[in-house]
Length: 257
Image 1 (cartoon, rainbow, N blue to C red):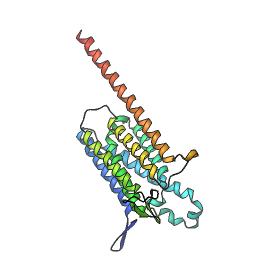
Image 2: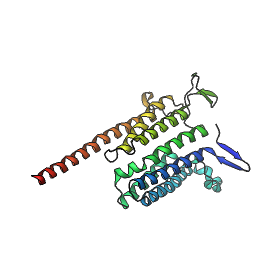
Image 3: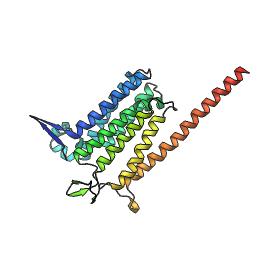
Image 4: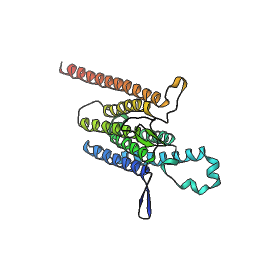
């Protein structure tokens, strides 16, 4: 695809550029949303920064450990970072653990915090889609469809574009409901379930899928689990808020009587 963009003497790594832009734009929007709701954005910024650093370091270390013999032969390459030399899944896991630990330490309310960070997740997902398009990762299976793209010696489904378009749709959905009255955590769960549903569908066209027993795609199995979990949480959290409101109404009626 176009992993490098030469600008004079400088070579810009396009996949990493899209990831950074998506993440920074998302954090900026989260800060703006916090201010709009009268929430102090400083703890949120600190959480984002710590999670980014921990996730990046963790992703790099995990990759180095996986190919330890190669890096021991030339230790200075450990500090040469690009998106293709990161263990993204491990990095995301470490970033999430860091975020949870910081949130517990600072006693940040879980559901409102997730709602505030939803635009960060959404814009990062768009940046991730563009990053895979630039790098050629997450490629599709061979196809004869007219909108196929030529990649890795074959015409393939443009799964990177499918994902980017779906991620953009999920972000637009968030924009339409950002000022509506809902229970805490609802906006995050809508984005999560939409993203999982898109991943479940798009994984069927991936050419790099890990196949499990019976030909089941690992990506679809994970996406289905996230989708079902998100729908279950939506039901549980919604019921919890309804019960709390009913209790408050009963208290008001008792006082009035």
